[in-house]
Length: 173
Image 1 (cartoon, rainbow, N blue to C red):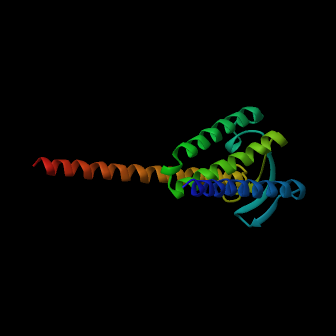
Image 2: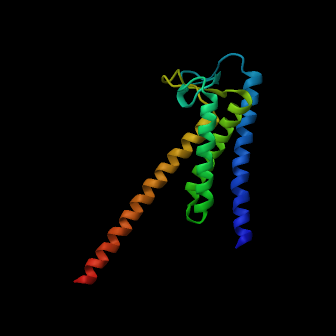
Image 3: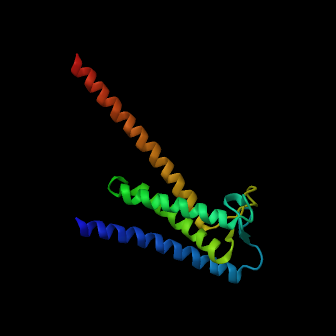
């Protein structure tokens, strides 16, 4: 049993590290090569280098330390939850948490070592939206999966409670 748990944690940590490395490699490529905006899909997607010193959607520009501290706290809470609830978390929820941690750590690395988050995905031609990066995408997808998982879990629990209540009522009669 212990060996299985150890292998499971190695996979989880490996997935997170792989994604962090991928995002940081992309950031280095963007920093070193993206000197002007490049249209990838006309009217939809461009690559535009932007140094974001704030949080999501450009909120709180210049508060790098504050956002770094918030990131550390959120990442620590998620890791603690994963450790304490490992046996109860389904695969989709675990993947969601891994994506959130990987994206959060990647952005944290940017904040701590660069003083800003490297943003480059630009969909402003499609709609007015802040420039973002792969880490932001991982965090957003992770939170969406997590919310869906929580809602599905909640509905499943409600159905189970209703079934149990119906059985209790049938047994009383």
